[in-house]
Length: 248
Length: 296
Ligand SMILES: Nc1ncnc2c1ncn2[C@@H]1O[C@H](COP(=O)(O)OP(=O)(O)O)[C@@H](O)[C@H]1O
Ligand SMILES: [Mg+2]
Image (cartoon, rainbow over all chains, first blue to last red; front, side, top):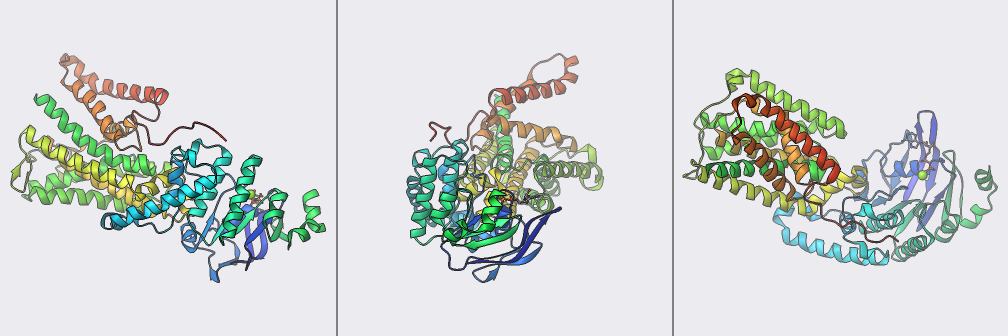
């Protein structure tokens, strides 16, 4: 779905992403790994329009998307999560979910006034779906809490739920299991696999090798901003360049 | 009795003023330090027009409309700025407005102000006496409360709060932060204009000195004391602070005290703010949403 061609991004002197080319065509769950500071998050920022590439192009479903603004990406069907979760702390857990659906009638002032019955119907449908997802994530009992009061792991689960609520074509997850306890990691994995079974496509940055190997069909490896390998989990685990990058 | 009516009218007008600031500060996170400018634009527009013989129904609409249009024009450059800089830009704008009122003597009579503004007549009802004016001010306040309440409780209001909490995360979810902030800012400006119109026709004399930073601070304090980001907060804040401010004015203090009344009032406001930050930073009314019961 996404194709990245010769993309480079430099910050001051550091080449955060250096002439990277990745093709995710036809992949249900693609993985992105690499040592700290190898440019993984920057690559996500490039895809979602938070930073612009110095050179190269990014296409999504055949259309150029580099240079577009972040709020256009969601409309195109690209939703991401953040390495340090970014829920809306002073919105309730439920409102964090309800904010995500795209093109809501009630968000436009004119239709809010003149199509109010439609607004109410949409809200009811979204709420029903949100309840279902929060239940799967095991945080339904927290629905009326401020999201800022949730534990870090719960916030990461909520962020995943929020991404799913947006019904995107592709979800980009930045280290979804980093820093959360094993039980929540299991919930996270279950959720991702359940969504995959429903046809959801993912692109996942992940540090935890067990999780990557379990989830991903194909893995891309970055080191110092360059792509040093790509392949199946088995190929990657035995790739000498990868082993050297991680050990050396 | 007249004092009570007077208090109620001023509280109603300041409730509108505070509700209009709250949609910006409380719901959208826009720290507008020049809100008094839109109040002034509403007041001067309507006053000048009625002094030219324009009927109140039109002058009121013009006052509200000009304030909203000013919000739109100022929003274009300033809403692109980050928080602190937006505050400074609005502060500067309010000073510019006050300078214009003071120096465009041909239009505004400058520091002399505009005396003799008439009490309004609307669809052949006159709002002349205090009880009559209270009906008008209260009606406008209730309407404002309902409109702002409807907007902030709607999906639109939810987007404003999301932008307040984390603009980048909202953008990633497809929300156009600039457009939403602009809508919030224009709505706030429109209602500030309405408050200004009602103020001018109530007091019947306005001058540039009525529209200083002190007014912005008072209305910010009303919002923060009442509880920003809540529907009732600004109304509660207006009741408490206006009651306090106006009753100071009516205390029979010895004449030699009159010079310290202003500074005294500002000291008390400062004290209220400090106590508030220490004991109840979220204001008298809390935002809806529970604090945590259990963790995972
Ligand atoms: N906004 C930025 N400004 C300056 N340097 C940045 C910025 N974002 C990332 N970098 C740098 O780019 C490199 C790659 O960072 P990042 O993409 O976060 O790596 P990863 O996610 O793989 O750990 C690092 O050296 C980091 O310091
Ligand atoms: Mg990272």
